[in-house]
Amino acid sequence: CTMRVHSAARRLVLALALWPACAYLLTVKGPSVLVTLGVSFAAARLVYWAGYHIGPFLRSLGFAATLLPTLLTLGYAGWSFSKTHEGF
Image (tube, rainbow, N blue to C red; front, side):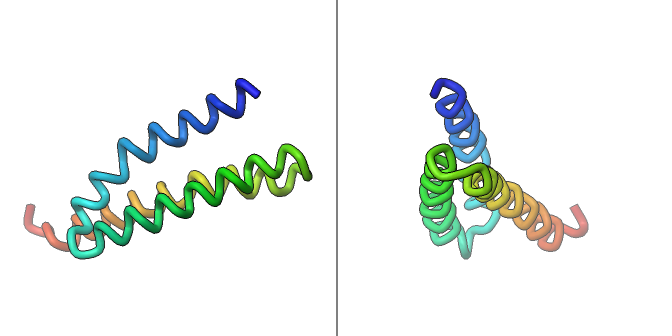
């Protein structure tokens, strides 16, 4: 149980550290990006939790679904920043 709490806490800290910066860099899409990330994070954590009771496939799916949207959003925000600040 403690391991699951630590896993969730690490993912939440990572998300809270990166999402506001990503929303700022994606100013046009910022609020919708944050809402989508928040809802997907909660759903993925539920899938991860269910995986502990149902089977390892759901646990690994929930783990990946928790982390990948954050990493993809960070990559997209960095790419968008580089496209708008090419001469920087």
